[in-house]
Length: 298
Length: 77
Ligand SMILES: [Fe+2]
Ligand SMILES: [Fe+2]
Image 1 (tube, rainbow over the protein chains, first blue to last red):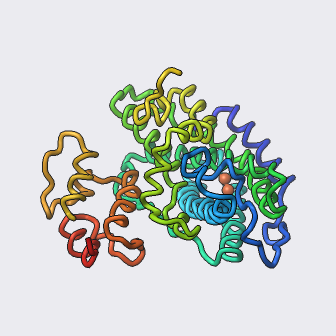
Image 2 (image 1 turned 120 degrees about the vertical axis):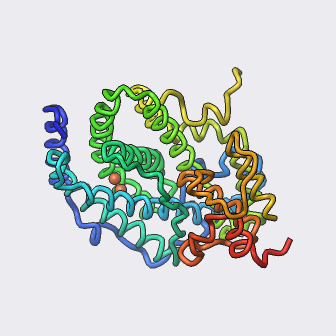
């Protein structure tokens, strides 16, 4: 990577900030012995049924039960997302092309290892399980190292931006248990640095691909990333969470809420920041849900 | 039941008119990594049980025959 001065400067700031705010994840939180089922484990407006006809039908008690399992699903998705990111960044640190961000990668890897630990700790302590990873990396990673690296950091950024939307909301939601607030806040406090770096890196890795003048390639990346965003949103709707919350016909329920028109605006909100970034850097040409759910003029 | 799987795949792959029982769904790009999670949930719904990727051999998901004989086998419907 022939880093521009601006990237090096940003990374210096981020490394300094990470050093200033360094903490041990193992002593950072007050793990309570138990968390009661009858409470909001997640801000109700972030639930997958929020705003839907079905969400209206469920009483508060059921919604609270669902909030527990959707919180566990959200943390489980984080755990699996972090696994991929740890592997991919580890593969690249201190290799040719990644000399400049490698110092920051050390902070990033250390922080993500901590995040994975506290998300897993929460799931195992209070729910006794982590939902399994449903993704399968099958043969679509490019053989072209420049393309592969661009996609890796673009995926990481998309994932972190969506997660951050949830963390910001719950880190300020005083109706949640202090532990829930604290975990979301602690995660956000680290993630903003990852997102700042991610944006710089994604733009930087995209530039040489644009310079190739291969429209077919750019089109393929555009489609891939929009599908990745859609898929990330769909992973928030987990039939196993519906089942664990005691809801009948979890698959039918999933199809119903996913198709509920009230969800369109929520999906847009979850993806707002990352969509704006990818559109303005011309990496995607339209919002991810644009074809699947064309919006009628109101 | 395997016809429902075939229809699901055909509906998501423009221009494909048929899928052989032994056609490799991944090599032929009928399924890719981004489409896999939704496919898995669809199969779970058909199978009436949760499918565990760690235990189910991924090979079983590669062809309609594998899905019929190993993933959906025993699913009553
Ligand atoms: Fe993280
Ligand atoms: Fe991160």
